[in-house]
Image 1 (tube, rainbow, N blue to C red):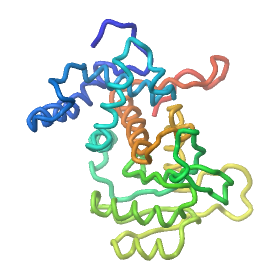
Image 2 (cartoon, rainbow, N blue to C red):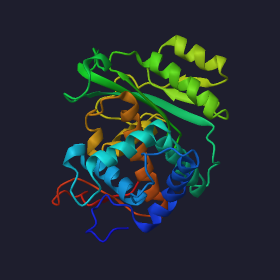
Image 3 (cartoon, rainbow, N blue to C red):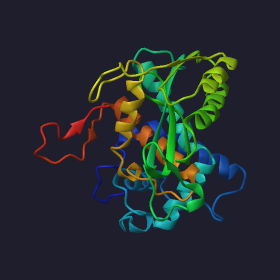
Length: 289
């Protein structure tokens, strides 16, 4: 750890202890294949992860990283490599299993919840990867996620906003069936079509569509499905996710995996997540997730 003044997004020793084995194994494996960046790695992996978390948490552009971090181009290079090598997804999976065990659950879930969220994009996002969600009148991208019943991320798929929920959901279901064969139950909202439910049945998953009670006004938590709605709320603690700023959809997925890994690491170590609410707000300060 460097002797610079710490930022609120920096990893504590306890959280770094959870993530370090995965990152060190990645570096060792690359050394073994005589790959890397053309010379022996010299950057502190913890500082690289701190810099990436700073971007994810604050929403700052890569070029605007503070100068006491490694050079932004180096940090982005590591982010891109870790994304393409599946490191962020690997961290998410490891920490999810630890959280489930801490909560007295089996490491592998047997049920899940699926939902989609359309978000606006920045000017850096290619028009070819965007679309229009006519129902929500949003031009941008769509984040489709699968969580367990605790709201912990199982899978994420980022598409153009115009992609129908059932189409993206079908791809996610195929991923889940392969990665989590123990899942036998899933909940979705009324935006998912009958053919999606039928596809789930072919995979041995009982899909249930949950809907609001007729006549209900205002926000009302829907049984089972509220967990995934809460997850979207957790993700919004990371300002990089307020919009989609990533050029590639795969990088957007990596930012979501990273945000959830950060949240789960804090949960495992008992560290609260600092809220961005103003100091005068009655629920300001710290949010435990």
